[in-house]
Amino acid sequence: MKTIVSWALIIPLGMALSALAADYTGTFQGDSLTVRLQPSAGGYSGDLQLGDKTWPCTAREVDDQLRGTFESDGSQFEFTATLEKGLLILKSGGSTFTLHKQGASANPLARSNAVSPLAQTVGSSNQMRRPTVPQTVSTNTSYIRFRRVSINDRPDMIGGEALSFLAPVDWEVEGGLVWRAHPTMPAAVAMRVHSPKGIEQLECFPTLAFSWGGYLGPGTMFPPGANYLGNEVQAPVADAIAYLKERHLPRVRGQAQARVMKAEALPKLAEAAREAEPSVPFGGPRMVFTAGRVRVEYALNGKMVEEDHYCVLNTMILPAGNMTIQIADKLYALRAPKGQLDTSTKLFETIIHSFRITLPWYNRYAQLVQALTQAQMNQIRAAGELSRYLSRTSSEISDMMRQSYEQRQASQDRINKNWSQYMRGVEEFHDPVAGRSVELPSGYPNAWANNRGEYIVTESANFNPNVELDGNWNRLERKQP
Image (tube, rainbow, N blue to C red; front, side, top):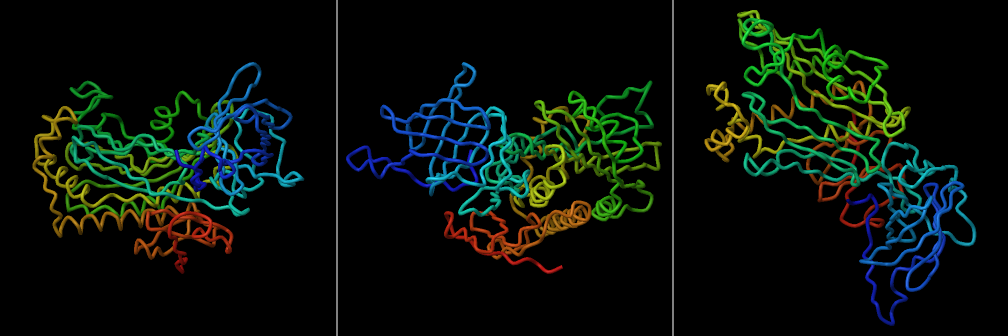
């Protein structure tokens, strides 16, 4: 896993030139942690101090990094560390600490008020004005570095890159694209993007569809809970907030015993979603869009967290057959430590707004959906059978398909802009490298981009990643409203 700090190459010579090798001797402080190391028997010995706790440690340089152990309450715990420009980057138990090498006097900004094991330390905020936003420090400058994340499809399906988005460089991604036997939504995203410490997290849930009425429901061949053409047979709910409270949260956070703190209707987001849909022909279904947000709180590993759940619900009432279809879309959950969720939202919004479907993948996927809707859908009983329909698709992108893709992305961008009216967490910059606009967290007047699809935002006008970091970076200009 990469960290936000750009690693230097430390090449131990192992000869008489050992003075050029990494020297971990000294005292390092930061993130509430103090590390003291001195040479000992071909390695290092010393101690780690966190608050009023001090643990003896030993370490040895292996494969260009320091590997060691410390003892706490009779148990041994491992840690690793690397050096760059006077910074000691130490990792243990899923936590990362950025420490400054000290001279004769200690760092006056270092805090030492945390009293907890390393693996449970959230980290100090002495260098973080936004505690829930992952930042690093170089020459006392705070910044966030984003990388481009690519989500690939299964090789036995369409294959290749299906979508991409921006995420902080040290955040982890779990899950991705999932396939299911559904005529109009055979593929969906089920994914978690979370910080290394596991508290801050964005979770994307698959779009779900429900059918009710006519020959579906109690006393029919398709009772509640049954599957009808990919849709779950369930009675309709009143709106998006009701869906989140009555159906979504019991399914995804039932075991967490999440407590609902507040709920908010998002009518402008609902209107943007409605405008993104094609016009319904005369005599077609009546569509009603609602959108909402529900905030919950619950305990996670002994700590209280807050989480916002979002939903856009499309309720389609069919004129014939007395049937109702509901589609729950834009199902996101944004989580942070209690009291810090509003501050973290701008980071989550950057991730969500950067989602881009890849055109070659979309081309074949749209052809697949067209083929499925024309087939006898009740004969498709498993996602594996979709492969025979995929064999009929073409990699050639027609003008019509390209236009469809561009219209879809434009609709998604409009939805995101309406969403911003509630979150108010991002600002728009022009990226000369990519040749398009990009939305990055607000409150940072300086932004940079490189040719690898990475971005940096910082408060410092003097910080220059071309000097501090690797690569070729270009300054971005904020777009005027």
